[in-house]
Image (cartoon, rainbow, N blue to C red; front, side, top):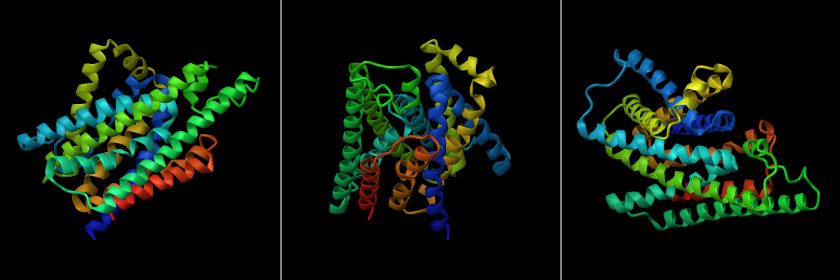
Length: 327
């Protein structure tokens, strides 16, 4: 029964991250990456402190072993500060749907990391699954690149409407040259791939430090280290004004960020840690990685984006590859 609840929590993670990704993409387009990242984890820290008080009678865990603190703080910094920095920039460059599909490569990377650090040798099916996952992603990314080139060609012959970028952030800055558009797409792809490496590293660090610790406390520690990291990063890069401008002007999108903080680092991460601790790791990894498929329908009906059959097939093939890894 507990294992079944863990599996439901893993699927809930994918659903939560789908909703959160849509909200975060819209927020990033409105106020920028730095403000969204910092305020997102700030809200999550408050949510978790209140939840911890309800469960444990204290706002913050104080009895965690030193090794857990080190690994979970490192996981929070890598998983949020570094990974989300690149992932959210990718949202602005190529949209959350493609960015999330690319970042799903974190699953096979995690498997390879477990092999490298703990000697957990993947079986033949796992290697086939990795190849299938990569193939599905290549199909989608290649098709998007071809479509963008076609739009640029249409624009050169006067088809301005066909040349309009699907991504809201791109559309807001107006027409861009072929070189700029190409570089934008490539940069978004590169940022998504970096995010997938960061996610895999954060997963391995979490696995090393979260054993025997309840999911709320582990998530709290990760979120608090991320909040400290974002604040320091904002101070060093002199971007604190971007954060305060949003924090003290709710009309700038603070409410959307607050809601995104519920679905992303609060519910999503919390359910994932619970799932990891109470269900089979393979099932958890597969179910929690369904976001690139779940986000297709919202992209079509809510964000009004055109999603080609080839892109849907590519996303589904990639998810089948993930399932094969843990079959």
